Image 1 (cartoon, rainbow, N blue to C red):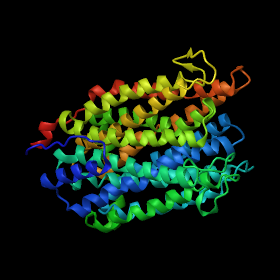
Image 2 (spheres, one colour; image 1 turned 60 degrees about the vertical axis):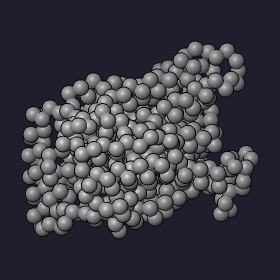
Image 3 (cartoon, rainbow, N blue to C red; image 1 turned 90 degrees about the vertical axis):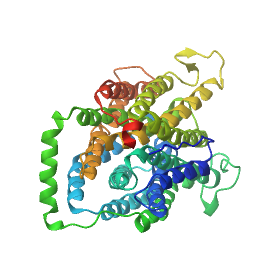
Image 4 (cartoon, rainbow, N blue to C red; image 1 turned 45 degrees about the vertical axis):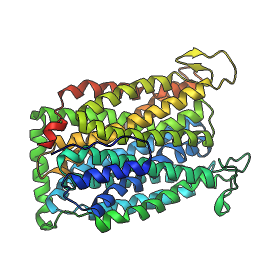
Length: 483
């Protein structure tokens, strides 16, 4: 099979056109509408990560809903960690049952409804509210529903195209998702989220729909907008992307659990499969924690406004789309393992850069000028690199998992993949929460800003653990995949 590569120009239309052309010319198993439907799931879901988890609602929660930024970081870690723990405990079992029963779309539908409803209800998180428990429960349920829907959508990927084209498909889908996140962020910051002081959005406009800046209604609208966006753009996947045929569900639970038990007993002897799950468990959790706390960190340590964090998010989404798109082509050329390794090294550097940057320091060195823009520029640079490396590592990880998954057990494999990611997803945020609380305690005399800086250091350790385990993972190179 000949390999066709397109030249990068950074445009979103060129990105999708190149992916579409590659799929059509490679003997794809699914027609154009089915491929587009599957790819649009990433477009539909990305605003959840962009608006809720990273750049709008999370910083708003820490800055205006929680008592202070450090406490907000701690509570946010608790809520997202509990959501991740719920996924870790249930995803392998439900994935095995789904493999035994056949279709994935009913599972996607159920978890989509749960996630969308929880997101929409975040509108009721008002500034300075006394009882934060309902908000924390909604955040945990949103994480649970949205992430679980992705487990079953990812499991559909190997049925769409031949193995040789999976890297490009995964990379293009991730790139499309970042473009969707970018557009939703521009919509939010340009027309809805306004500064409480000026009452104007990033574009200098009054918020649409009569949203009240004083009550932070523009920031709170991130929840309903995310839910509406998701429900609209997930429809093509349900309508056009083919699903597995239905099997006898009456015996599916027993068969699925039996199959999962056999896999778990066999897994420690499968060195590559086991090592990949362990490695990805650490590096994906580190990446998720970096995304989750990046905006909160910038708000607390650098004193950034929601508008500045939004610009940071726009930049990260642009580079994320480019990174995912380019990573898909590097995946096809060199294999997914090389892409994952390079991305982890880049993210380790970014993590050190973030931790060492404050309003008056870069790499722990004072900049010497009060109010210098240098720390802001350094943080923007870190955000651009995080976006690019994050996009490529997530796209390549899906392909690398397919190389490990036994035939006929793809949903179970993605369930274990979710377990390997979510088993420490609660450890990552909770460790950040615990470290932040520890360094904020009376045992130390650290300021709130220094406590936040020290609180995110567990992220770097998780990246390092993932990198150490990666050499034991088997990966199909481009030539092997094409055979």
